Length: 521
Image (cartoon, rainbow, N blue to C red):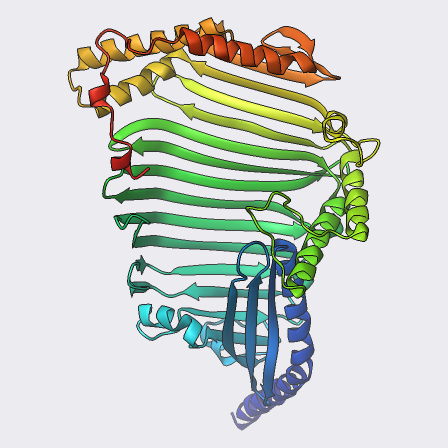
C-alpha cells in the first residue's frame, strides 16, 4: 500500500516537473510563434484586400512561467476611392502555457498543445457603441489552441447585440460562433459558423424607415494553398430567409439563399466559379420564382493573377503615400501610373492572356411557375501583339471569341404579366389569365417583329456569336462593322412602329400603373 502510494506520488511529481518544464519551454518559443502567425495572417489579409491596408501587430507580451498576456492592435485603412476609412481595434490575449493548459484539462482535452489563447476585444472609443449593444461585454471573444506543430484550432464568438447603433439605426443580432482550424503557415484553413438572426432597422435617404432581416445563416469554408500561394477549395454560405420591407416600397422576401465559390487547378491553370441561388423570390406578397447567378473563370495563370493583385496593392499604397486616392467618378480610373508600373502591368497581363483565359456568365436565370428565362455569356481572351494598339484594334485582338444567348419562355412572360395584373388590383382569376395572355402575346409579337429575337418552340431567343471579325446574330453572319448599324436600324424601326396609346384588350390602363415615387425610386 505504501509502495503504491509512493509510486502515485512519484508519478504526480514527475508530471508536475514535466509540465513546469513544458511551460517554461513554451514561454521561450511563444513570441516567435506569435510573430510568425501574425506575419502569415497579414500576408493573407494583403492578398484578400488589395485595395486596403490591414494588419495585426503584437504591441506587447508579458511572459510568465505558466501563462502570458499579449496585446494586439489591428489597423485597417481603405485606400481605394473617396476619403480613407480608418479603423483600429485593440485585443488582449490571456494565454495558458502548455503542454496541459487548465482550460483544456477541464474540457477533458488531453492532447498536449503549446498554448491556449483566450482573447477579447478591448473597449476603445471606436467600438464603444458595440460594447453598449452587447450589454458592456466584449462583442468579440475567442479561444484557440496552438499545437507544437503550429496548427491552430479554436472558436471565435460574436456576442449577441441589441439596441441603437446611432440615432438612425437599430440592430438586433443573435450572435455567432465560428469554429476554425488551420495548419502551419495556414497551408490549410477550415471554418464553420452559424447565426440564427440579424435584423437592422434604419432609414433611407428620403427619411422613410426600412427593415432588413436575415435568418438561419450558416457558413463553411475548406481551403488550402495552391500555386503562387493562392487559396483553392470551397466556400459556402446559406440563409433560410432574407426580408426587406419599409414604407412606400414593395416588400422583398427571399427564401433558401445559397452563395457558393469553388476554385481548383486543372492542367496547371486556375479554375474558379461563383454561384448565387435564391430558392424563391417573393415580391410584395407574390411568389415570382427561383433565381440563379453563376460566374466562372477558366484557364487563369495563378502567378499572373498574384502579380496583378500585388501590383494593384502597391499602386494604391503609392497613391496614398502621395495623398491621392482613386476617384470613382474620374474619367481615367487609374491616374498617374508610372512607366514602370505600366510595363509591369502589361507583362503580367500578357502572361495572363497568353494561356487564353475564358470568362463566363454561365447563368442568369429566373424560373417562374410555368417557364424559365435564361441568359449566358462566354468570352475567350488572347494575348494581343501589343498593348499600345488603338483601342478598337486592341479589343479585337484580346477578344478571341464571344458567345451569348438569351432565351425567355412565353410561359414566363405570362407568369410575370399575371403577377403585374394582380399587383394592380385585379383579383378575378379569369380576368387575370385573360390579361396575362394578352400581354404575353403582345410582348412576343413586338419582340418577333423587331427582328431582334427568333421563336424556337415556345421560347423567344436571341443569340450572338463573334470570332475572327465575324458576327453571327440569330444565325445571320456579317462583318463586325455591320452589326451596330443593323441593330440601330432595327431599334429605330421598331420604336416608330410601337403604338403610343394602345394596350391589349382587358389590360390595365395607365391609371393603374404604380407610382414610381411611391416606391422610393
